[in-house]
Amino acid sequence: MHVSGNKEMQKRGIGCVQSQDREARKENKHAIAEVERQEKANN
Image (tube, rainbow, N blue to C red; front, side, top):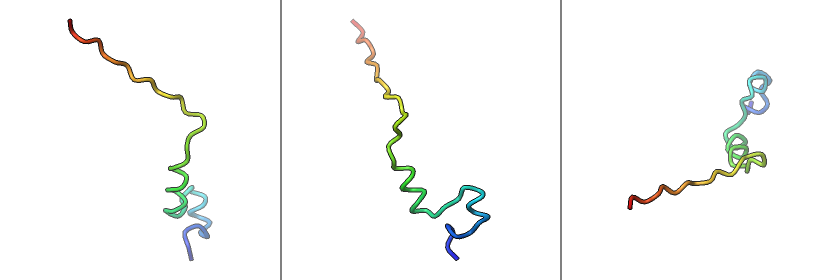
């Protein structure tokens, strides 16, 4: 039996590696873009 067909694994939120990898690579639509700050150069 494949992992995705196991009801106990589904209850725990565990899927196959390919599915987990696909989900991890999805772009987060709710992410906030971070702005890099440039440190002031010592004069």
